[in-house]
Structure formats: structure tokens, C-alpha cells
Image 1 (tube, rainbow, N blue to C red):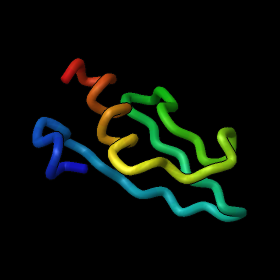
Image 2: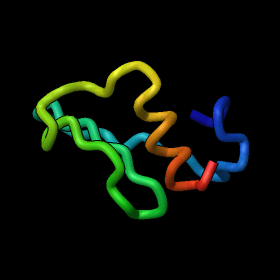
Image 3: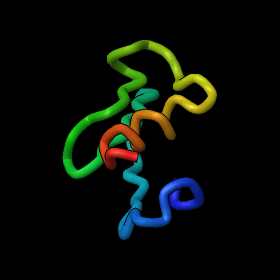
Amino acid sequence: MKKYFPRISELSLVPSSGGVFEVTVGGRLVFSKKALERFPEEGELERLVGDEFGA
């Protein structure tokens, strides 16, 4: 993700279980595999994170 958004100062992976895959930006949930019952589509995470940064 830092490759696409060099302004990101911190990036962390939080281990989980049960197939949960969630992406948050600044404490705001931008993608949840659990809620949507699917993995992100190609380019989807970059778009969602970019929207949060106003990119």
C-alpha cells in the first residue's frame, strides 16, 4: 500500500481469525471482507484508501 501512497506514515497488519479481512484508514473502516462477504476486487483497496486521502 505504501507503494501507492508514499504519504502513509504508518501501516500495520493486525492478525485475526475466522476469515476477517478489514482495512481502516485513520480509524475509519473502508473495507470489510466480513461485511461484504468477498475479497476486494483488483484496485479496489487503492481506490478506497485514495478516497480517504483525497487522492
